[in-house]
Length: 337
Image: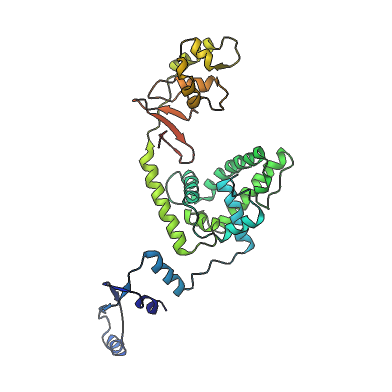
């Protein structure tokens, strides 16, 4: 079937090597044991087609054009892992009909695969290409807790996997996280001790064909090269003596002892100019209320070449370039990339 399909396509010059035995050659091989067979050069016309077209022909010839059967376990695995990877998104809060359609998706939007790759990079932090059960369980427990907190904050419990009803209290929430984590381990690993990025792709997009999975893996390689280009060295932590100095300035500005300072107070103390208020508010006021707490203030006033404290997610290089820690990429990068 494959040969007939390929030979019917417009020809381009291509040579393929195959090994053919005639009955007489088989007789000679039996009478002359140990004689090496020489492969015969067989030329045929291969159509001017792209790699995906040729791969689809191979899939058709080998019976791989049909998606795997959608068993209850496969469906449940897809639901849980979509929640695990994407959390609360417009897709996860859609109605039942739209959610069902997600399981027939073969090649998703590129940004969905990129989100999966970023999470995979955090799972596979040693770059081995595989994640074992211990690594996954440790990561998944905290990650699922964060996901469920997102659901609770947005009050969109309909995006939760059907196997996990809304927790009644804190104790029930802890039990739910453990239950969901163990279910993830069972559905993904089964009898295996580790898994790969390809395994996760097949679980989230169960209708994807071999060519679809190959295309998504190619995208992931592109994402990996992009991360390598954006990655910068982690800025060092500001020395304790200098951090204490920043704290002293903060307490000097915070005359009422409220634990926060307003932008107009920074202007009145001569720390910034009035025409800089809009810029500093946009860059450093996380919640937009015009108020800075101690750590926001220290981030803002930190000298070039440092980050202010251990948990800070912002810093700068020696030339003043703003650096941020990208939690999805799992590395420091320049803010504008």
